[in-house]
Length: 323
Image 1 (spheres, rainbow, N blue to C red):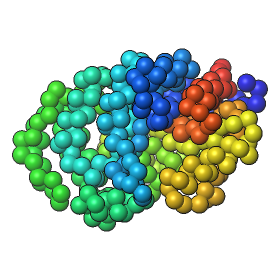
Image 2 (spheres, rainbow, N blue to C red):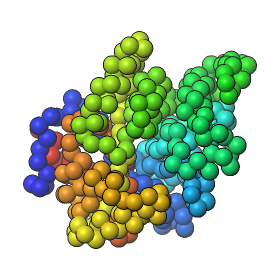
Image 3 (cartoon, one colour):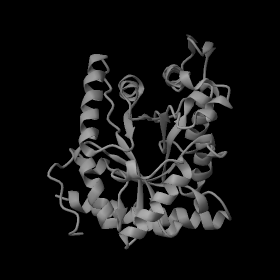
């Protein structure tokens, strides 16, 4: 553990730290017994949750439904949390989404976290769903307001630019209440966190920017008069794992380019590569900046290697924070 220095700033409650690994590939496809065995491996490693992504049709038609994937992952292990990061809410009407979330929460109470983002990396994805990409921010804001109301279990009447409801009700309401975190790097995203979120889910930013963004969110939430300040802040991060840093970086660059169709270089400084100790060392400063949830998309030689690597990253960071 010596390669990861102890942070100069210890979070108020290190026990709030939670680590997740991406549920994809072998964890969601194939024989149920092999999927359960992988989920057991995740739990044994100490990893707290599985997280899933969401796209309807991304670039070449690739995609996955975040809520269906969460439902597939839920029965694999009773103790693993489920984190949707991030859901493209603007592509769906909030009433059926609220019902899906309420149903998921009934079978996995207290295990689900919903991350919401505006997307937009592929405008065509919105167009084929009949959504003008230029409206995605306004839609997301409006849908979040409606979704929050519906998940309370109380009747909701609403008339906005995109949604009209009269006495809509979704019961039973999730118990405990479902955390909703907001993804995105723009100022509009930070405003969205301050207005509607239980926390921020960051990506591709430095620890310094992370800390300053949280300060902005907190100040704006106070200005809005929110008593329940956003506190559940996270980081979604791609990492390459291998004992050979060059191999780790090349493997990571290829995986990110295949998905996003953009050069890797602008994102390399936010996407650490190397063995678990090197990656943990790169992620540790985010804890001091206020991060408590890590969603780690580990690209490794196998699903097993990625699970074990995330588990080791978790252990090294927790050891570095040990008093």
